Length: 392
Ligand SMILES: Cc1cc2nc3c(=O)[nH]c(=O)nc-3n(C[C@H](O)[C@H](O)[C@H](O)COP(=O)(O)OP(=O)(O)OC[C@H]3O[C@@H](n4cnc5c(N)ncnc54)[C@H](O)[C@@H]3O)c2cc1C
Image 1: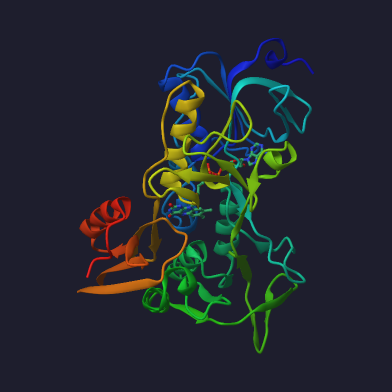
Image 2: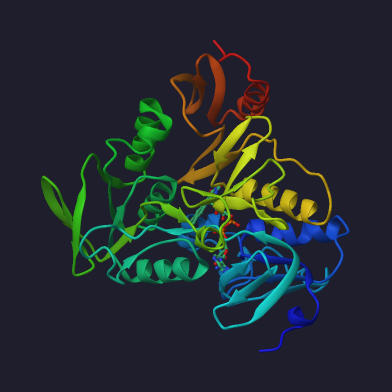
């Protein structure tokens, strides 16, 4: 098939359709990158706001139209190709090829393929009736199925599982949340936060079954648990994590670590002319002085902007402290951290439900989680950036 790419390379080809991809294309233009810009996304929807899928969108408080991230592509002379899955990256020829057989040549390429939900690794876990949540299509399927269901089992106690469970309970569904963690997020955020999240979920009407392993799913609706009665519901949502989509880079011979594409602090990969951004990146953060795994919305956008700027010939560096927010029912929290471990968690109760948790490693501040204490989040970012001692 003849494509414009075969006669002359595009200035930038972006692979992906999320926030990192969008930010990369816009930043390339902003930085004065020359040539045509093409964004290839295997999603059928133009880039949209993903976080509401487990929050307002699931609850029915936001519709698909309101999730749009903007339609400035034409205005910025960016070509967005939807339903285009990139199947091959050829770093010697400087081309990508879609599964439909179209070839796009590039001068610069940004990989922003993100992550996909992990399929529940038990018998029946791959049943089509066991839903997962990442794309707008999956979010719509979940919302539609929830409308017809009166009971739901949510498997997993990561943030997406907790947010979805609270949203579904708020819609009047009977929700059971099962997890192999004894308390939600206890491994990542510690006992105090685990107990707090469990309290929020219980108050929202969620029944928590913690510390159990799921051994199977029968008929798409009966969740079997080791050493515990099975839980049956009209609808089962598996929220058991996401795996980075680094295969494209891996097959092309780029450095890949744990499925993520390895990059320096400028988000340049091991292949000339190829940058990476977002959840699929394993990039070196200049301030941390080490490579980090980061799966947060704001950081995907920030990394996309850096990759796009550098692809245009700029010199941007990834040096900010990563962070995310989460809404669990009516509760809102923020977390800023390097995200690769801590040995001390210091919980400070501010009263009336507000709190801060300071995380330290060898006496140095490495993270801060806040609820109703925005000033501490700001202060925490400064302390983490500076490698300052853990606050008393
Ligand atoms: C339900 C939900 C709620 C969330 N809530 C929050 C929150 O409250 N706060 C927060 O900080 N983060 C949240 N996140 C995480 C956040 O959405 C991600 O960190 C962010 O989307 C990562 O952006 P990305 O561009 O790297 O990847 P993605 O958003 O995953 O986008 C990757 C895109 O690439 C496309 N793609 C993949 N492979 C190919 C290919 N081979 N060819 C072409 N296209 C391809 C995919 O279809 C997708 O469109 C949430 C995530 C989910 C799923």
